[in-house]
Length: 266
Image (tube, rainbow, N blue to C red):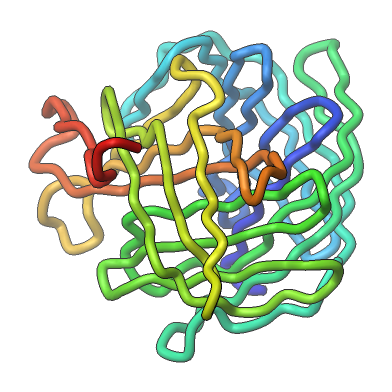
């Protein structure tokens, strides 16, 4: 997959890892359940493996990174060595967009300084979206099923994995709510056809989310992208995942309005 993005979750350690792109411009995020968040670049990602060896910025509270500006956070050595094994065939997420998704198993290690975490989990591997993403949610559940939902400016799309089969599903509902900054704090999403299954989620730790601000590709304003690990529930089964939210702003230093799309009560 060209321009791949990977998000995988380790059920044993509770780590959530997000890697997008490749090379020096890659975006690498590691969320640990201890409340620590690590941001680095320089990932090497192939269809069968991900490798990172870089100095990473360490955050223990909500943080914002601005493209082109120095990061004042403490720097620590971060290395990731994870082998990827396909768990299903890939498929097009929507007929009108080239984005493709599949599910992979990930095994390996994450080292932060002298501390090594052995990780084993499942995640979503996808191509970079063709258009602006407003929200995206990726989750893996305890019964080994998984869900993927995205809301673009042009509409929604979703996928579900049950056993080893990944299939496209319509997204009947995609609602989010934020409390501070641009991070999403709660989510409600209905996936499926005749009998949609409701997936709900809440941010795992309100102090653990990261926002990245960069100039918009068209040169007008800024794009704020945020990500946070979530705990999900679907039909009584719990899961772990990542929720992303992107919005446009006039400036990277502008205070942000809360995201509030969920009806009351939620």
